[in-house]
Image 1 (tube, protein in one colour):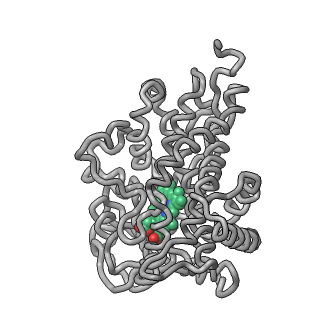
Image 2 (tube, protein in one colour):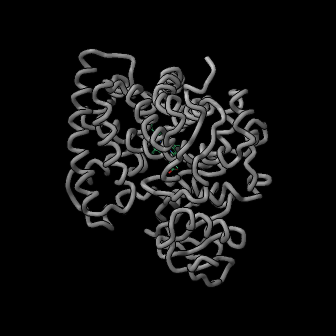
Image 3 (cartoon, rainbow, N blue to C red):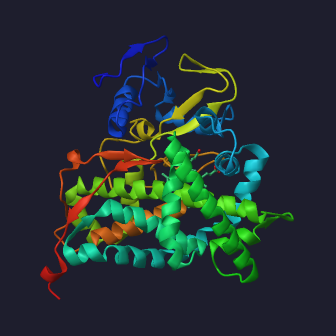
Length: 416
Ligand code: HEM
């Protein structure tokens, strides 16, 4: 490797190296992509990384693995308290029957129809949020990508508009729970949770009295064989959806827009033919997935390409390198906006697979499509106001460019 991460060959074709976390998010990706061209598996201080398309695809569904459960909390020494209680009740942290029960009940509420119904409202929100950019001819699209998903989620859930600013702050503070938090971040996340949960419970109680066509009402009503979510469970899961969906959607929108600015020849054709936008958004999910790896914990002893995996070992299934593997996708280094329009396009793995496959994928796609369409509709000429390679990347739960300053024709300059 050329980036300072020492690597040495080990038996099998794998590679063992020291640490990945001292590299920035983009350098980590570049290092893993380089490794993937020569090895199926790499082992770092942070765990074992599985890099190839066919391995990742098979292992996502492998029953010798479970989700990471509470292992990050254990590693941080958070052994009790409200944050651990809540986190331990999420779909993401549960397995087997308990996971299946929660997931089935939430899935009843999160029906695809409700997402398509949300499309016009998301479109209107996107245009509203971009109004200052249209007016002045400049703005930061990461700021737009931060606000659009949480505003759309608030509408889907049925959160009153007046509460959205606070709701957004709580959600942002809680997003850290999916990674290694500092003590200050633990305190901020605990404070946010202790405000958000009672708020969610009070909305649930209100909707039980006065049902509406929203996700909160449906979560309260979801029922399977006489089993229902308690108010506390429904509140935990409502917060699960908010926190699982916010930073990830922000990140994917930002990654998609940056990719389009890096391919400026696509801006006008996509703007002139918006029916092509969903396939381009799908290709961006492959080309630059904001979540580049899915963590799993081994339940048994077994080997991957000569590497021994012991029970409890952390294994990262790297969707980013799998998405760039030529055995999975022809000419994977090329951003091909029509790839997913073809019938033979392999299934996308960015949302995972198996029992934990992303529950919000349809919603995330819809929001990213509407975000992209609204940005492309900004008055031309639309361009990035800073060279893409100078923009630093950040990592909260997802990984994405820290800012996307853009310029377009200001309103005064656009003929009526
Ligand atoms: C582009 C944005 C998103 C990406 C890339 C993404 C990706 C993922 C991935 C990789 C997983 C884990 C799959 C696995 O372990 O096999 C996951 C799980 C999950 N996602 Fe998403 N997600 C996104 C948006 C959303 C949204 C908008 C929501 C909610 C509205 C959401 C809710 C969830 C939930 C609840 C789970 C856990 C499901 C379970 O454990 O059964 N996600 N997501």
